Image (tube, rainbow, N blue to C red):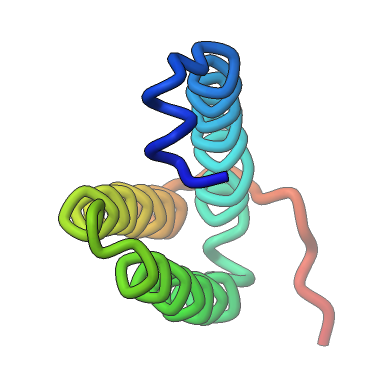
Length: 112
């Protein structure tokens, strides 16, 4: 069923679940990975940031695909993807910088 038909039918349940789900996803992301970057920047910053870059590329593929497939909502799809990418990247950069500047020990031990 097309999203337009669902919206026209007033599917408050779906909108409610999507909204709740995105809040859960954003909070989980903000509390997990940027925090890990900050806690362990001294031992893992290059590896963590490598995976941030890979994730950003993967996310871009999906956002661009969604925009291509849904021409009606192309602009909000691209704007939403770009906004979240910018916020997420800023969180990781802050976590990395704060972790490298911190004198607190991380949660991992460097083995050689």
